[in-house]
Length: 173
Image 1 (spheres, helix red, strand yellow):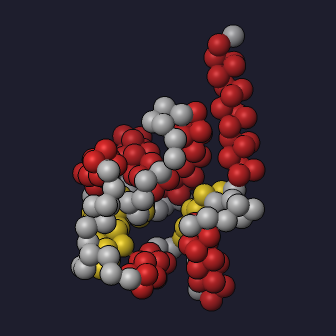
Image 2 (image 1 turned 90 degrees about the vertical axis):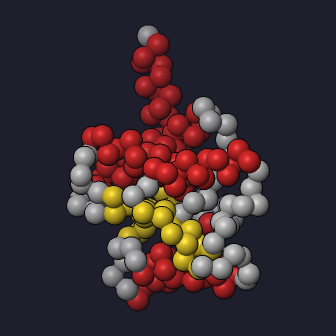
């Protein structure tokens, strides 16, 4: 997505941090995420850092959709996945088989929805992408189950970016 020190990444991590802090203060026991590059791995990184501020208050889990997830990635991205897995309290694959069909991804979505109480999703509804499938499934699930979700849209990210820039400007003065 971005380079490791890209300001956009820092803004997104800050938004993740603020949302995770609120969830922890609301009493969340587990922060459960996937292993995709970007937001999911950043969630592990941020949650791991929050353990210093909130010791013994929550655990981190990374669930992967299938066995050998990430093996097709380049070496650097495989290393990042491995580092993320090493930071969590629990990690497992929903399917014990390597990738065979899209049904494994559907089973993964179902697992995540049925083993969590709420979701935080960074997604721009005006620019659909792969996350669209997760968003639509979360919406459908929440219509028939007691399931909350918070959609962080690009307006919220822009607001956070403006705040980040203002803080930088104030720091430089």
